[in-house]
Length: 498
Ligand code: BES
Ligand code: MN
Ligand code: ZN
Image 1 (cartoon, rainbow, N blue to C red):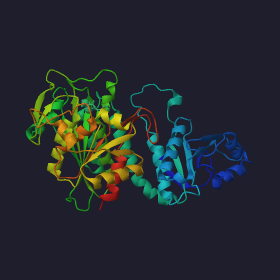
Image 2: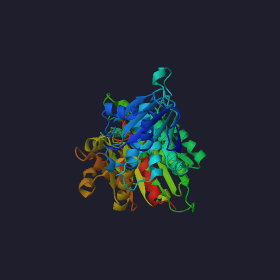
Image 3: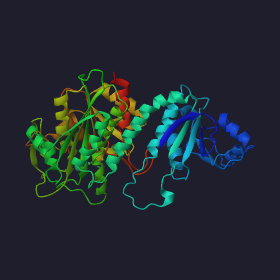
Image 4: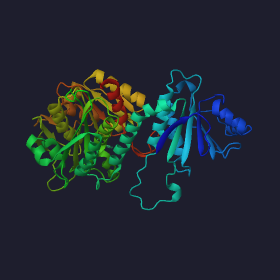
């Protein structure tokens, strides 16, 4: 989808989409249109009982007096709530409605409600473009037949702005983020027969074109480093386990202390010998969602040339049961030297992160470390499918993450941690066990990771509920969401660039 920014006026052709908040007078271009059409616009709005409530749409086909194919008037919701998020939602809704409508190009415009305070017009326009782009994502490469009417037609959206040149600057960075979200969604959507650890690494090498340094460790190198926690997970797979290391050196001082992101990249999680039930197991192709987000974030930072040094590390492994697979009860020694009793081979994400996080903090000595993982079914029970769980040893980092998530419209909620949870993972025969019992499953998983974190500020985001969406909503279609790229990109932009 191509986004351009144009002057706020009635377009010459195609579809015109106008966003109007609740109970607003029709002013500006809408009023002009109404005059040209001899009152047809007002009549159509009345006939549709249009009030401007969120999500309402009134449609006028081939309005008289102008050359438009159609006019859509879309409700923005309460005028007091109008801002960047409402604008993004408008862009997303309008794009969803028009994507396969037959229309190739459309012009989107919002009529800023008079009650809205502090509205940055350039930001509003950029967020409309972002919503449209992100919602229009498709993954069609495995379809060999598709009805013509199911194929996307909308290829171009012109977003109306008071000062188009001004928005173009803001859009450059926003577009880099949108591209990165697409890249991550592709990774997450790919089936596990196509995307296995080495293939993930191969695709991540694309980031070299953006200036990211990409390396990967194979099983031999990881064994030398003592990474037996992650290697144990991959023991039953024909595919080779990989540790992906990405470095973006965008700070003025290339040697300045970096920030770091670590992702769980289980390219398929059968559960291993503690095998999962058959129903719905296909979902476990997205168990590399954390790695997808980390790689997408590196793509975004490099794509917009962020002035920061950032490290992205992904533990890439397939969790399969076979004759060599890890058994429940096995004890492994992690890279940190701590031993783990593996009581359930399906609690593999924390084993992957144990070594990845340890490697990250010891090699790079980062300012902070954030890990992302589709770690527990329990976080879905706790917070549902639209809010991720945040766990942290540092209030400042946690607050910054929560604030960034809020602006970007990505749900995030902080969960408790502490000794009363930590002791639940003590093992009778090793330093710890990899499951914590029936209760507080997301928290005991986070406590496990924390045992591999030294003094560095750290946060863990459990995205098991948010990495994949069963329904289209807001700025994502059904499927991979790319959750977390936006909030982490904002965290970096607001606090760590220089
Ligand atoms: N990958 C799963 C968690 C998951 C579940 C992600 C649903 C996305 C959707 C993880 O590896 C897992 O199997 N966790 C177990 C842990 C348990 C064995 C302690 C779980 O949550 O059941
Ligand atoms: Mn599992
Ligand atoms: Zn898993």
